[in-house]
Length: 421
Ligand SMILES: [Zn+2]
Ligand SMILES: [Zn+2]
Image (cartoon, rainbow, N blue to C red; front, side, top):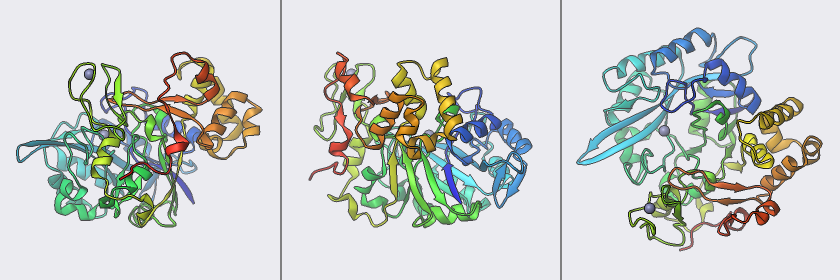
């Protein structure tokens, strides 16, 4: 069956997450989005683990459900942060973990007591990545370990500030038991194809949601039986099992370019290696595109041996918010969102499958924006230093806006080639 999987989520117990994230609310939003396999998130937090235990009742080969007839599967998962001194350099790396049962989740939680603050849903552990993987694999040899958002400057395994130059360096001996990495919002598979040291890793995309609306903003579409074993096998050998990934435009991600949020200043690292801020004279926050450029070593991205299809899209809330010039949290945006969902089933169907004419029968401009997204005709002023990229989904409208920035690049032009050597 087709599983639309978001394998990196958070509960209300993780820092900076909304207080309304309950397991039932996650299920309801997944249904609207079209996601049918979710990481249950944050299992190292005791209160959340108890909520999962009392709600995820029906177990089927390592996948869980709220009730027998429910269509949404959950898998026990969490994100763990390690923070450690590595020969004088401070490292900080985030890692996603998925396991096949409540019992294993509980054992891993117990083994991490005393290693860091487990009250935070995404705990900060004062141990190295190797120690962490020793603990995990000694409890469950078949745990799925995925380095999270690998390019982000501060917490990515390959991040410029506190990361490494390869997954093997970041995780030592235990890297041989890692089969996949998470590309994060600010990079897409194409960017990763330029880096041959990633050839052996399946490229996964997840939401890393901190609010319900963001469930499934990136996801992986598998064609497998609903079981943990099948998921493990598909992540290890993705051909014909991982059908495609659903991606943010990487320019929309908040660490794409180099820049300074406070100075409203950013630069395209493909045009310059200068990372000094012209406004304040300090060093800019290094973006994901720059870091990929540093580690890239091939001219032709198609030389990557195994390439899975991927589709860029934009969350429907954002599209409606743009069209109506109104906040994502406003009543009119939510009403139009719910009308579209109740008419066509779920968000992925609307973004990817439903005909433009059908969408136009409910709202012409939303239909036009979706058509532009499907044809890569949108423009984006890229994100930097924690600021999300700014989308122009209806270009004629942007031309009328006096403040629209001329440097927004057309996505289509540079789609197939990033780096020229
Ligand atoms: Zn993280
Ligand atoms: Zn500055």
